[in-house]
Length: 202
Image (cartoon, rainbow, N blue to C red; front, top):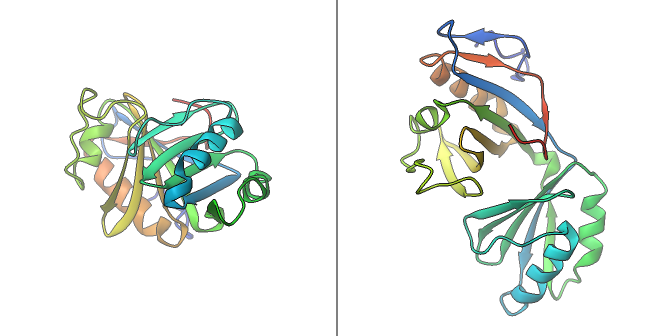
């Protein structure tokens, strides 16, 4: 196991690996709420409008996009499926109460998800070791998201900026994923930083 990982598979801030002139920064990302909101097909417009009101900002224009606002990051995963990430644990209850069963189902993902952030000019090249997504900013610009599989682990990739990517993975596979990530990052050199809050960029 990499020195960057504890016995439980968690990242250890201050550790590093690979080249001394590291170009990759890896951090855990802290969050309070991770929710998937599934709209019934005939209620999509209503659900999207209410999500915009709750996050106090514009809803992403189409699937494969996300928008970050003061209360939360709101992603559009697929038709009728939205992702909500925020710092507030209370948002799980708040959103569940905001949508009656005939409009949408709200699933609390927080206990079953872990969030990582990789940063640096070589972050796209690191991800391309496992996925064939074109990370040219003209094709996959900040605000883009994609669902993929890396090292047999399902991952939601969110591009926060040109050089910053958030990776949402199942908590049960965090150790497997972070071990792959640190091994793959050795080519570029990496350091592990302190955890970042979900709504902080960079």
